[in-house]
Length: 131
Image (cartoon, rainbow, N blue to C red; front, side, top):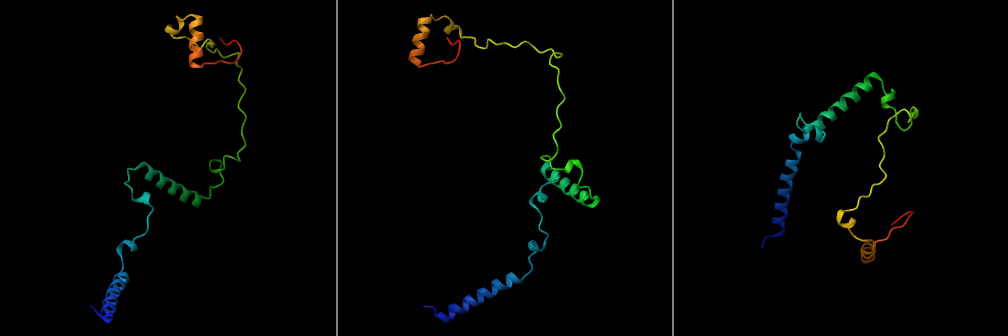
């Protein structure tokens, strides 16, 4: 059995070694902390975009051009009305209103067979001029 005093000394020695390691300068911590997108390769489009945004922000701060229309909040910009369109001058293609074209097999059924199928499948239609 190990005496309690020996265990305490071993713990003190261990803690001193940990404290010594903590006191040593760490190269990783001494480097400037960089955003993760700066660590990406230069040909990465997202990193290029972020760098460009940083450069533009720095140039805008230097030039004092924060009040131009491009940087203005779009929600507060007045909405300009669209010009009127004369639809009589435009030649539109004809609109087809008969959208439904029955399948050839359904087209061959008699009205009684269609009614039976509708009843079996519980098909209902509501509205004006429904078959």
